[in-house]
Length: 260
Ligand SMILES: Nc1ncnc2c1ncn2[C@@H]1O[C@H](COP(=O)(O)OP(=O)(O)OP(=O)(O)O)[C@@H](O)[C@H]1O
Ligand SMILES: [Mg+2]
Image 1 (cartoon, rainbow, N blue to C red):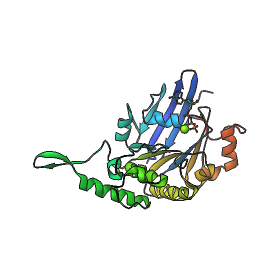
Image 2: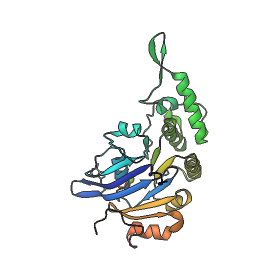
Image 3: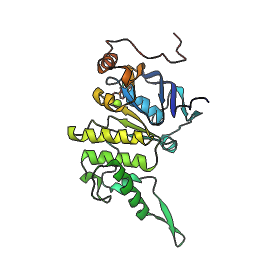
Image 4: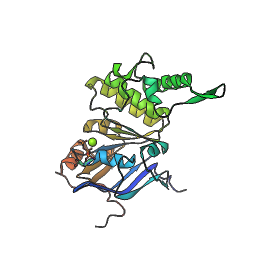
């Protein structure tokens, strides 16, 4: 039997902004139940590559496949419909809304009461409570307004929003950047638990040790180009750091369609 297609394939992806080539012919594959670390120096193209996946930007070239089929992701809502959720560094929550309202923002559940479509608040609150419970981050009530939450709690709400809608691919762009040192290990634990439930994640971070603690494989970008891809067990912090800074040559197999 042929091996199952990777959950997500990005192939030959390129994007320029004016004279800046932010992403140059990059290939990325993500398997089901995998955490892929995406690392590289500032301006290496990490966030841009993910924004090309969620259609915040349109690629100049390249194709995306999900479950082996060509995906046409035209805008961020379409990305969500494909099961791709991006969690931004600032969590992108609506500060004045409750936790439950944030989790369902733009995707509210409705039910019919005497023939009228009304918000199904009871179900939304229950699902919000259940999914937050999965994050193991303590929050007293799903009616709490988001501004009253700590950074770690807001992070949990952003993750709960992704898992409530059964995201297949969760992208975390520097999720630890605004967390206190104490709240980082629980986040990494949560990521590993989600992975063990079969979810797939792309984890962008500058903390290379965290990549080795959580990820299955690591992909290194330098100046928009993929310079390395390896299982974390087959590389080292020193090697990855060398690839990021350019003191080491590329490792990993070149892309199949490489022309040189
Ligand atoms: N909307 C945009 N308009 C113009 N240039 C952009 C835009 N977004 C990104 N760039 C440029 O593309 C390059 C890659 O940026 P990107 O944000 O992807 O880097 P990054 O790897 O995420 O870096 P960091 O670690 O600092 O977040 C940079 O040179 C950046 O200035
Ligand atoms: Mg970035």
